[in-house]
Image (cartoon, rainbow, N blue to C red; front, side, top):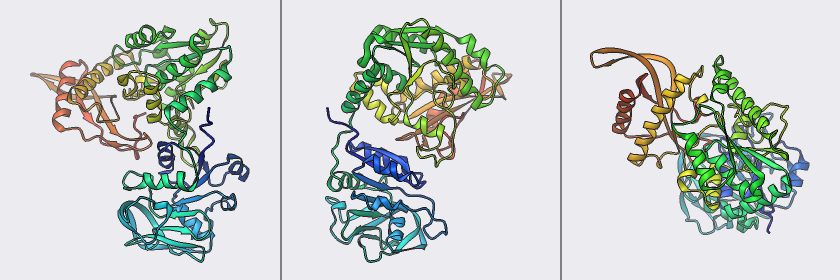
Length: 516
């Protein structure tokens, strides 16, 4: 078996909002990569043994007195380097060139034209649309570099070192708005760095199965099965690796979607022949959450109770030593800042920041380095049903973080009925597969309404739908007004306890996809 991590690129993060997207694009073309901070220890950069290095964009200016720089070793390792936006600017600055503030900042579409041939642009048209996002620009290259592309406002939009395989682009090839960004990254990874495309679903599965078997040995593993995409793929992956050594614990928290408990049991126990234990713990979760309204506290309480239940169930298994989880890369990023520690903590995920320190079971997280779309591709490769794999994401804490403030059974019952209507209408209209994630949020406020000739004073729910590729950023979905109106009418008329429906038009950023 070929090592899928051997042919890899290293991305040094200077704080760009697009750094994670660079990693996604590199993986999409079949090359493994990791993200380190620009100021990581030199030993880590050397020991990573990358076939090439990408310097990300960032918010800084190289003209500031304490500007951040790429480690000098980057240019001494004998591997190709690609600087993107700020990454290009710091490269020029460190090689004696000049960067200045631009009179005309470029944010958005721009057209660049190639000025000379370069392997970086092999097979790419001479004129192309790209996505710019910069205030500073390179004004002098110095003696080491030459111009290979220009735009109207950036005469040096791309450059190449005259002797070394060092390249820079002022724009962002990683965003979909840059027409030939994928081809540029392919040229850098394959033609310049000499990487092989080893990162694909089949290879990821083979690698994960081998690692799981080696890590687990003869021990038994418990998986917290929620029925969501991530835990479902982990269940299939672990079952392929260790078979009956896996026991799935499905905790019916009372915070699930309508009829979800029965559906999960039917799918896994009856259809996939995976060993599943169902634990009815609704009363325990509502009792635990009854006096807490803080989002962070709710996540941590839910995480703690989950682990308590897993520990209880593990004591019944003689060799149970592992707790498997469907943790994926965005969970880790949002709970611990960025992969480099340069971003702010947004929220603690119940299976990352919410776990207690005194756990009895060791963690096994086969999907920890994967993005959501990679998880889905692995699920399809494992033979899971399309509808299960491409079901909209559902948070581990369930409706506990879709009920704002205090969580009560009454609220959960109202919310799951409203959400079921929302999902039914999205399916019927064809919009379910057009949006990346949709759900209903229960707001703990009441609004006056009129039902017939009677005054109605009941709760408010918010509908949320977003479109995204990587779940790191998202835009609100522009559902047709007629559809939103029809869904609203059904919810208000059919669900007792709701008098008003609103629609969320907040993107990510500034909001998060979930409300809590």
